[in-house]
Length: 387
Ligand SMILES: *Cc1c(COP(=O)(O)O)cnc(C)c1O
Image (cartoon, rainbow, N blue to C red; front, side, top):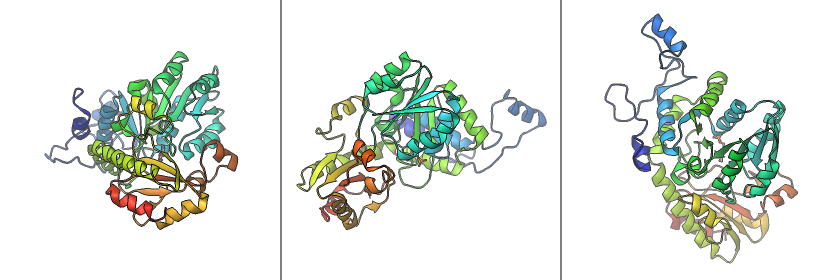
């Protein structure tokens, strides 16, 4: 189905039936698969005959999710994982070895930084952190042993962006794999592989599920890369469960509509916030005031659902606004149909020292919103209560 449009592929790709003519995809809740004969078992194990053996290796529902996401990202292959962190960890462990060096964006999901600093570092793999948008810093950080660039664009919560085409020229010239965590925009709004990236990583927990129901992850790229990552997953076990695969598979059906609605709501809310006298600054890529607006426009087809803003009065003022809301859920999660609100300096970025917070521009008055799918007028009224 290669020539179809995104929305059609999102609904029609990866469909498979048990033979019972069911219209909705089935959930294959089985740990193992049985064979017609001893010969077939032998052929499956020797890979002479393709097919399922054991659910840690493959499962038809997981396969359906992988096929659909592969089509949407324009990849050759995909391997699903039990969470976004499992996807990042599997990528690093499958592709790196002792002595290798990674250059990573400083402006990544907090647990990704912790993973690099406290777990990957135990395997004699060095990491250099750079500012996401600073192309010279990526170039300068390269050593003879650099194997991988790892980043998220746009960053959360401030929406910084890196020029992926320019960065991929640097990575390709130095034989380095470029891996992009695309959880914040999803393939509905950004296709990193088409901009020169080699690997796309997902926390499908976020917008791909879109309703906060389960954890899931995925890694996409060339057959060669994914074979290695899948080998790591099937051997070490962070495989996606059939049930969770079914949830995120169904999530993909409506992804494009939802991402558009998240983006529309976010732009309305951000535009309103920018007009409020007690708001010092609004960080939303869809606003022309955002320093990366033009770059984002050139490589994204939308701006997504994350809006953050700084209020006058520091932490107390921010807490007052958060506590006055009645619709928003106070939680650090994002990518849900339900809008969420959080104070990064005391939650997601609470482990940082004051100096690190300052360097990352996480001020005490900063509030982050993951704009959901409620009516935006109600969301605006809700924020206005505490302003
Ligand atoms: C949440 C998140 C992750 C981690 O995903 P889990 O599914 O929670 O393991 C990784 N990257 C980004 C950008 C995220 O938002």
